[in-house]
Amino acid sequence: MESRILILLLRKVLVVLIASGYSNLGAAQETTANGQAPVIEPGLERREIRIPQIDTEDFEVGFFAGVMSIEDFGVSTVIGGRLAYHITEDFFVEMTAGQSDAEETSFERLSGAAQLLTDDQRSLSYYNVSFGYNLFPGEVYLGADRALNMAIYLIGGVGNTTFAGDDRFTLNMGVGVRMIPRDWFAVHADFRDHIFDLDLLGQEKTVHNLEAHIGMTFFF
Image (tube, rainbow, N blue to C red; front, side):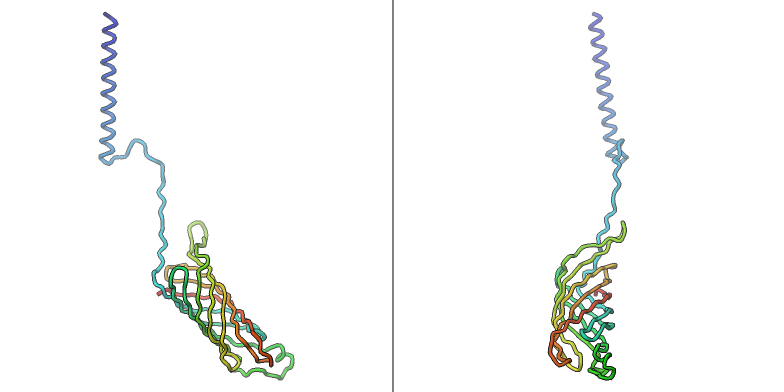
C-alpha cells in the first residue's frame, strides 16, 4: 500500500516537472519571436565590405613627362599627351604625341665646329596610334587598409616621327603600369621604344629611341 502511494507521488512530481519544462520553452520561443535578444548571443563581428567604385567612362585623357634617349644624340626631356579608349576591360586603343630636343652627337662635340643639324632640325616630335592589352590587372596594397586598382599592360603601334627635317615612319612598343588612386584619376609609368630608319650620318640604319615617362590621366 505504501509503495503504491509512493509511486503515485513520483508520477505527480514527474508530470509537474515536464509541464514546467514545456512552459519555460514556450516562454523562450515567445521572447525570441517578439524580437528580444536570445539567451545565447553569437560572438561574431560583422566585417564592412567596400566595393570598388570605378567610373564606367571608357575614355582617358592626360599628359606625361620623362626622358628620351635619342640614339647618337644623347638623353633629353620629353613631354606629351595621351588619349585612350578602353574597348573592354582587357583591351584599349591609345593615341599619344610627344616632343623632345636632340643633344649634340659625340662627333659634333669632339670636332668643335662641325654641326650635323640646325637648331630647328634638332627638334623631335612624334605621334602614334597604339593597341594595348592589360596583362596583369589586380590591386596593389598600401598598408593594411588601403588598396589601389592597377594593371600592367603591353602596348605597341605605328606612327610618325619628325626629326632632322624629315618625317619618318615609326614603330613603337613597350610596357606600362596604370594605378587608379581615385575612380576618375590614374597614374601611369611607361617604358617605350620608338623605332625608325635614320640616314643622317651617311649610312641608313634602324635606330632605337628609348623613352621612360610618368603621367596622369582622367576618365570621362
